[in-house]
Image: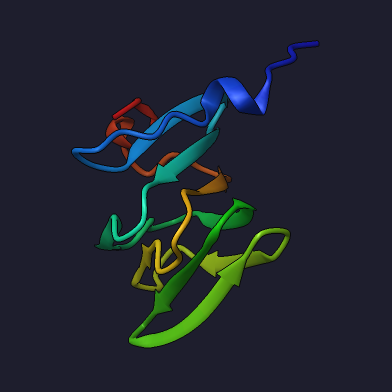
Length: 113
């Protein structure tokens, strides 16, 4: 068993959003994305994998194939890897997303930033 504290993965920085890897096992990876108000995750895809987003803290906006949807703490979203999506912290407080990729499309998706 491995155990980690979510608080240790919630790292907010002024310059840009952060990504902190929690676990990488086999073809899957779990990480936390952290955003200060106004910070964004650019539009992208995760080909060949399923993506699960859980709002851990704060509020934001997920845009999937051009359609915006609010994402609040405690809400969960499933995305198919071919869907183009982005995220913006549209709230006034820091926000964090708990992310699961069922298959790592490329090694760069499993690195801290």
